[in-house]
Image (spheres, rainbow, N blue to C red):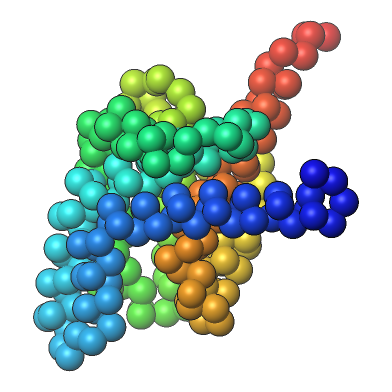
Length: 230
């Protein structure tokens, strides 16, 4: 198909790909989604703390494997394999990477909990400390999405993968800025403007942008390392 009909067909194919994987991601995260929804109706601080603590306990077992599987399918798309079977591939990536993403999830969740606890106790002291915690949040977000990308793209040992995710977060700040700005726009549009995007596109769009940036970084690093020494 070519022309307008061909373009529309490609658009609908992408809508189908993104929405199917995003719905699967939501379904695999249903307990955490329920807890996040419950936080909106929490009447006191202790209830909110209990919900957040439960999410932190469940995240390595539920959120990290489900998100890793989503990144696995997105990786196929970024690398040109657009006809990958969606349901089968998602389940395959989920099973293959479950233990690795669970273990890495425990480590990263612990880091996030430490950041959250410090933020709760210290962030309100002054603007400088608040800014420091904001930078820490952005850094952890990038490190986490690069960990998901690293998990599905390489076969490195766990701590090497986490270390590489850390260093990838340190290099090419313009690419990092692009990921942060794009993710912020997607989150804002999904939560604040078009709420219907949350179950259909929010997760997969962020995953696509994040893995594309990760893959672009790897290509730039490989190009530099392959350049002949003067």
